[in-house]
Length: 437
Image (tube, rainbow, N blue to C red):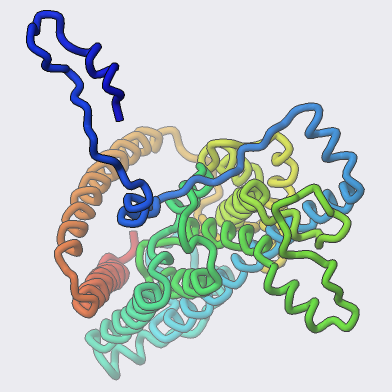
């Protein structure tokens, strides 16, 4: 709305006539109708509120809280629980993967799996002493079923595990597909990722990791265990329903427990549960960061490496008071792996022991070979990355054209089945026909 006097003053000086540059509009705008008809679309991504104001006033105010000591102790207990639960999850993955692989190996041929590639430096007794699988079924299966029967069992067993894992992820928890590292990094960098830490996602991710690793595919548990640790860290702050249930069941529960009023964090603190102080973006992000570090350390057996991963790679903001908390959780997680194996010399999910090797020092004449292998590995790795990027673009375009859910499920299962059959055929053929190196 422009007043008449203003519109008269906006005439161009060269215009002798009365044509204003800004023309008065007598029509009125109905704001209530505009708000009623136009509904803003919700944002696709939301940011987290983990920015903490740190100054002398907030520090003194926090320390003067009557329950400051209890809150601090609870925070350290949650840190230890994140490390413990992540370590137990890693142990569960390792244990069931070993069971599935052991069943497959003992049904085929443990000698065929272990003897090939050991060279002629060791006799059969030394090999049997080093490996635990002493029963061989390969000769009997070869004479009874032939080579085709062995291929059928090996490829069919791996195919069953891959298809089952794929179906679980696609049907029940699509967010469980992949390693989960992009979602963890996005959350730790301030993006509120939807369905990031649900219970169904945790179960499907756990089962899918076990089945996928045991199926013989060229995948590992390193990425999924980081995501699982992050889910555990986030889940420890989501205990409101559990507290409500406990209060309803408890005979002496009162309405003053107050697990619902969480906005006034430092107000009415004496009437709130201790866990309610951690239901905010800042505390939840800290526990997710600790869980990711614990998962990394349990996978590689590197407590300090897990700390550095969370501090330098995953999180864009890392508070200095998180150092000792993160290191404590990573040590607990790796200690769980050591307890499972019964030896402090092995404290990681991965094992780099390929076979028996000569204990003598590397000869000087072998060093040029290492340069050649390193260069070849770099070239092959670069080519693989290019091929992987190109393949992902094709897959994105192909799956984007499919709107029917049934067809989409069929194509994804067929893709996983094809990769499983190709990988199983290649690996078993290499073992049978390559011979000893």
